[in-house]
Amino acid sequence: MINGKWNRGLVLLGVLLISLTAFSAFGADVLIEPAFEQRERPGALFNHDAHMEYDGVEDCFTCHHLYEDGQLVEGESSDDQLCSDCHKVRPDNGGTRLMTAFHRMCESCHDEQKKGPVSCGECHVRGLDE
Image 1 (cartoon, rainbow, N blue to C red):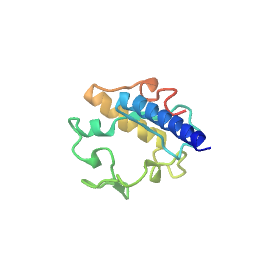
Image 2 (cartoon, rainbow, N blue to C red; image 1 turned 180 degrees about the vertical axis):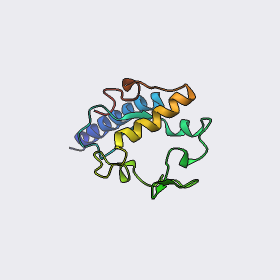
Image 3 (tube, rainbow, N blue to C red; image 1 turned 90 degrees about the vertical axis):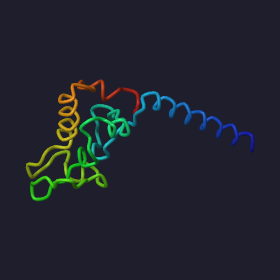
Image 4 (tube, rainbow, N blue to C red; image 1 turned 135 degrees about the horizontal axis):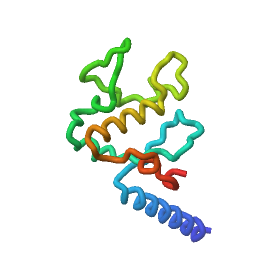
C-alpha cells in the first residue's frame, strides 16, 4: 500500500515538474480572469517580470490604473484588485467591458512600442490552460 501511494506521489510530482518546465519555457504565466466564466479562447500568456523592465513602465500604475469619479488618479495603483472589480464582462452602466479593457491595455502599448504580439493566437495560445 505504501508503494502505491509513493508511486502516485512520484507521478504527480513528475506531472507538476513537466508543467512548470513547459510554462517556464515561455517565461510567462497564463492570465485567467475568473469573471470570464465561459471563455472563447485560452487565458493570455503574460510575463509580468519582463514587462516591469520595459521602457515606459514606470510603476505598477502604468498598467494598474485607478479612476475615481471618472478621473484618473495619478500615481495611484489598483494592483491589489482584479480588473473585473471595476470592468464588468457585461457592464450595465456604460463602463468599459472587461475584454475591451484588457485588449486596449495590451494592444495600445504593443502598438506604441512596436513590439509584442497583436494577434489573438499570439497571446491566447491554445492548449496551455485547457
